[in-house]
Amino acid sequence: MNYTYVLLSILIMALVTYLPRMLPLVLFRKTIENQFIKSFLAYVPYAVLGAMTFPGILFSTSPEGGLVGMLAAMVLAYFNRGLLLVAVSSVVVAFITQELLGFIM
Image (cartoon, rainbow, N blue to C red):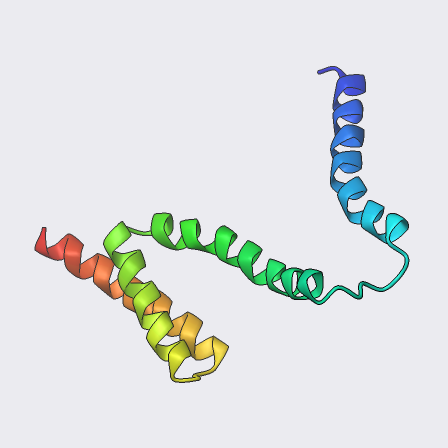
């Protein structure tokens, strides 16, 4: 194994990961006054979390189990249940749905 290649790859990956996080802090020192940009940036974490979570929900189990588990989570979240209850309930419902569908088919 070529250790120079591995170390150079790690260095490049570290730079590619670090630069997008560091550059906004260096370039934008003043506080953001524009309300549109502030509201846009406020929703970015939720959008990224949804984009990362949604494929995992559908492809972690059978698509039917994932959809039923997601529906259970949405219903419980709508009625303001706690995060732990929503997460555990959706996993249990997805598991039971997957097992029932496997038993039926």
